[in-house]
Image (cartoon, rainbow, N blue to C red; front, side):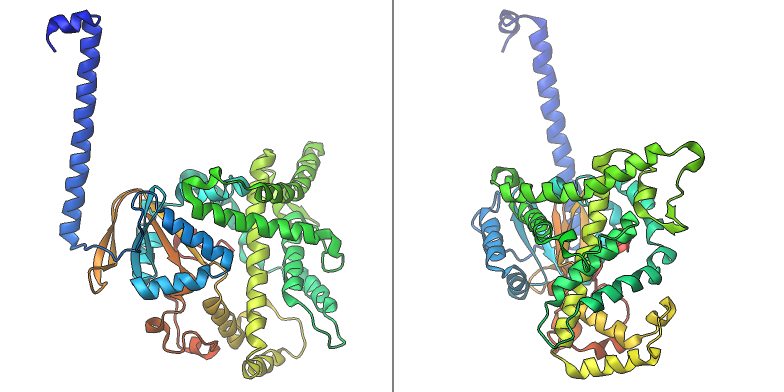
Length: 461
């Protein structure tokens, strides 16, 4: 293009625009080239090798991977199929979830790098926020960066020993639980009672007043219980769909979320109104007769009902569902192992029917073994994920033998599945599928057992 041609297009401004476009394109190419060179240097420096790959036909959006995952979830075989994938493709393998390259791993050293050693190089990222956003967009569970740091710092004091160790309050709800169990030998669904028990305990801690659903089942009725379940399962479904999450009709999911929000907002609105109605000298110190109340403290930081609702909902679902699941899984195992039940009963009998202190509870070693074994076989958190924000080398998983380092490039979604990690026979022995609490006599804390995650973002309670 000569000068006359440029002038015919409007003169110097067009020439300037053309120069800017050329300069911008050149800069972009240089940046990409430098990133590529830096990445290749990192690969060579650490001896990174390719990963085994999940056999999919769609290399761009992983549509087939999404289809397989959604189908498995509907069949209720997602967890068993995930374990099979690790057995078939290796302890670390690659795939794709819509626009994200994915590394799935159950190697303890890889998980340690992501969750702890290189913690600042990974974030929860868009996949989880997109999935759980409609449920609790402002919760600490989906926050990143300074927002997460602020939320975590605020929540931490609420889970101190003095708060969590409030055994007097817990004793009240344990009595209600025992009273709800039939004494005539009839069959009872303990999982339903455990859900009500943990709902009562959690609301007592959060609101300063329990909903007492063990005594009054209508306080947390079947409709609300189902709404919680549909909301959580719907969020998991959205995670599997990735960028297509908002393109699929989800009327039942959004209706369930609205019901749960209404339940939490009722308590939030009451707390905000009470705080606003207090005069200067009568302000609450976050307690009721000296007792710590979580919501009273929370409203001191904000009067934004949506933010308060989301923070509360994250704590409520975590406190209610995880604890009830652990109790249900433990009794499921105990019912099938009378020898374990007998030994556990013998240990607890040393309390002579007296109310235990927190230290006495911690001193029940075999009870701890049973809880750990239930968490190992039936982890309440099946897995989690992080997104790399810079190139990071994972120590193992590459090459034909699966022992070479691998590169998790910036933008990679790294996923862990604890349900598969906890059943690796090379880590736990040939009886890894068996419920055997005695194995914990010799076990020490390590990255092969992660019932509550690990690193700075581990379970706060």
